[in-house]
Length: 314
Image (cartoon, rainbow, N blue to C red; front, side, top):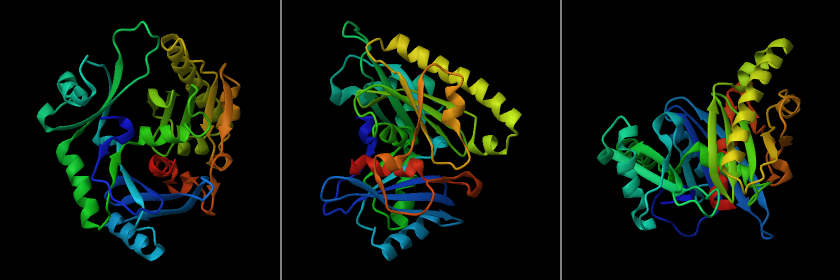
């Protein structure tokens, strides 16, 4: 099963637009709606956040009131509820890959392989002479996936898929670079995520403890020290990617630039050799809402939900 379609659910017809849902807990969720116009251009039509007990039920009520109930709907697992593992892919037919990988990762997880939901994708080969291919494996407890489905069903939200934040962010990275290799950085509320994509697929991912809130609260001296240490890790990750993927010319780092007062692109550009560019989503999709796409002070980050909505919209 491809990570482009992580945990697919039965498909529905007569859908309108695409809804991405990101949940941090049962009491916190963000939603983003993307539609494609008659000319094929993407538009971000709505953003909403929900807090308190019953966040998904509140979201369902919002869908009914606003007419977004008939969207293709994609729910992101919280990062605490799955593992994303790089492994060597066994030489089996594609239809048997997920089952084969289930047993390959059994020593890497702390619960029985029989109790796991598994999805996987082959990473592009670094060169044609390589006989062994790498794969990413998403492993979640089957009962966790079932619980997320049950919570959505109880809230009367019909899901098309359950996905993960890294792939939602990958969808954002494909906006400026659908086929070429690039890196993208998201400085979020709980961590930072650095992705390397090539040929439309996720090739490398690293998580860091650095948060938008910590950077916003830092003094100028503290900010510069944090950036300098972080830039070293980013550069090392980029160098490792280019050593492994010889045919991919990385070259550029896109930094998601939606948090006011956080000049990450300019700061990182002083310390790394990659060409660093701030990434404003408005350069690639229409933004038909006045809400900020990220506000760390208000503990709201819509970017993962937007990436999830891009799954079906693009």
